[in-house]
Length: 505
Image (cartoon, rainbow, N blue to C red; front, side, top):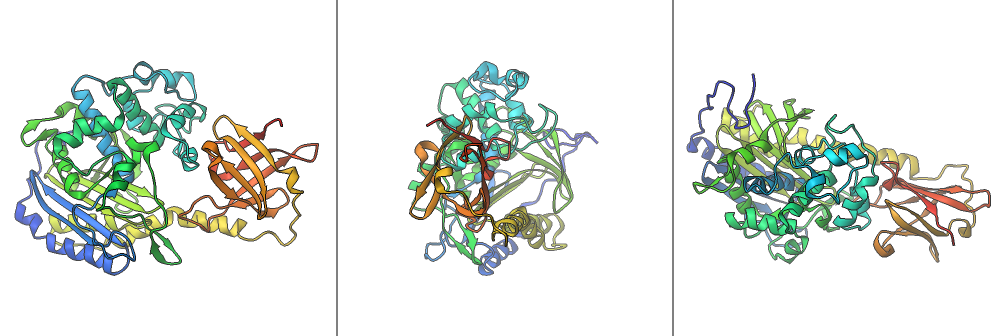
């Protein structure tokens, strides 16, 4: 059966709308599930909103903004949204499409020719639709790696031309923060404004979303904001911060659930806000079309597709539009809309890893649509998120936690010290300090990784502050003169761009 973008089946029949009392009957259990997740230590804090049509039925906070401090999360607490920013960005671009400033088929080479992909044909043909659907061919790690060492958005966008395609252009789904960010920046270029200002003018301002922003500085200035938390030695710890400005359209938004409730209502009303057509239905409906298969939902098994910044699924309660977000430094977010019934839920958590948002959302949907929870979904979702990095971390620790018994000594420090570079990573300087070798990289060498010797010309460094026990290898290649002529940094080499060559002295 063909499914249309509006959420109507091919027959044109709309599912029976939910009765308000049907949703309200499930709210006490929702509140209880959220509080239990906090009380059990599954997350430090949560904020949840539920809308039905033009009504906000629920907006509450649970737990604390930061572990060790008394301030409680409430419905106005601002959270960083991570990749839940993507569907918000698609709404912003849909507003520009409505005004005729761009079209979803606008070619980037026409509206922002400064943005280039690796190969000539994709560079000339790639459209906003391609980038928001993750079918440009860019690998998922493109840009993320050099963002981690401090490069800004303009630098990352310029260097994407150096990244080889992961899949053929329009040949498959390859989820890419940098690719969607390129799409948002290209649309902003056509509009002649900064992306952050466009979002304010086209969406946040008209909807009165006073806490919403794509600027990290705005988030950091909020007094009512949630800190990021990771688990260190089994305890939730607010250890690191995350400035996501370099990928603002893809992951840099922040907002409270009260403001996100307004955005959900706009989406469910097909672009109308308080009865007024703010965004054209056609421009917005394009974002919900299931264009590319993502396989199956890892827990429910429902067929899953990607539209333009939205996941589109067909599961046990009908069609859903949704998107999750995650920062490994400590954020988890989720929005789920059931367009046939006008129901929307957003759940924000200040912790990673956790599947609590998905688990609570799925449990709540069962209560609303079926009147009971057939099985608890929180456990399976927690397992899914714990498995994202756990096996890789354990494998890396098993390989590099301890040097081999027959370790070969390193060469003298002077064999490794020097300046190395490539066009993607930039300059990497290996320095000798009183505590051993260190690499300095990123803008002005501000990022530093101390090196610990592992075996002969291989050293280990720890690049992720949220995962301080995750080792990564740095391997020097030695020339005929007995000095290193190249260095491969594993965390920058996912796309074969982590090898930097020694510069002439």
